[in-house]
Length: 100
Length: 479
Ligand SMILES: [Zn+2]
Image (cartoon, each protein chain N blue to C red):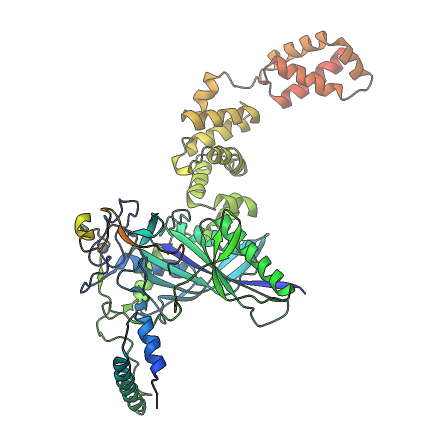
């Protein structure tokens, strides 16, 4: 039986950048535990003859052709940004080379 | 203790599709900041990405050229992290079912061929770019690069030295350029290389602790960074220290690697299947169509041209480094030039002119037919090699035809026996003391006399003919 601890919830919340109060953490310990318990239940089934489902969609190969379409006017692109300088989105300083 | 290095490379290549990978924005990232952007590549909620088929075609072509197995069924996944270069807080990539797997590429190091395993090549989207820091505490973000088609190519840990890493990058870049899928410009970031480096005592099976080096903007930088990192590891271990697993950046100015501060929890990306994009199924027929459309690849072209034109392995290698050079060479030979001499003139004279002018052979004003004509004139003795160098420099500068330059500058060699004989007689008459020395057995004086005749003809006498005539005249006068 899978067990979810408060530390697990805090770790996942941290990755998702969520701030949770104690009540929320307790609720999530319970709810996430329930989900894993349901998974354990599913695991009891014999699926050795079932094709693994890798994706929720049955469709495959939906593509677009390599054609350039009009982009947004820059004013519109920047419109919702909390801070911009008319050219760039302005954000807190990015550490050099820190991209993935 | 003796150590060996173990290096694996990760290369990100921007694929040269006209539009981005999941939207119709232009792939031209030289545009003014944030002008090639739309709701999809800005990561607005509720938008629907659709995969560019050109990216699939080109990725499969790369996979085939790298001897990979093409997945019949593959899917896209979300790689989750928070960062200003990724507005929707996840990057669309491929996790457990990449499009291409288990390939290899042969590299050439010190005349030896070595095979480097390719673990995988997968599709992903590029991130936005932070271009400048404003007042120290802020960065500007340009989303033109966000969503550009990116192919990540990962090797097995088969590389054993900085030299091999450089050879791998060279071979990979050559392959990508032959396939015409990327301009592979490292300075502009359309090819980005990262290296995972560790060392272990020779004979030990287990890998040492690795560090990852990023931020290298040139091929020579990769070579230096890996060399530095290998030496740093060995020194650390020999002095009783331990290598710490970390990401380090290459500081090109100081010639060292420095630890990079990383976002926390960077390694738990919680990948899951991208629900907005359906799986990619490349069946045998599709794979076959792409296989048939592949150009002649570097190794095949090298070996064919070596055999067909009788080129040395070295020459064939240099000439096929780029497709443009190989095409140019074949046109010179097709225009009637001797294959070996054409190779020399191309690799030595033309190449040094191109390098000095930082020019691409595609823009070269010396046409293949002109170079063939030049090689022909030298072979027939109409001009000598030294004149040839002047002529090719002039052709390179002005784009004039070979024969025009030869005529204009009166460069033709003197091949008229009578004319040379007259000059020889004059030179011998002017230098009686040297003639006397020659007769008394001082052979070296012969060279002096040749030089005098050459000077009198302004270097235009055919050297072989001059030698013959001078010897004949000297012995005639003796009798
Ligand atoms: Zn877009």
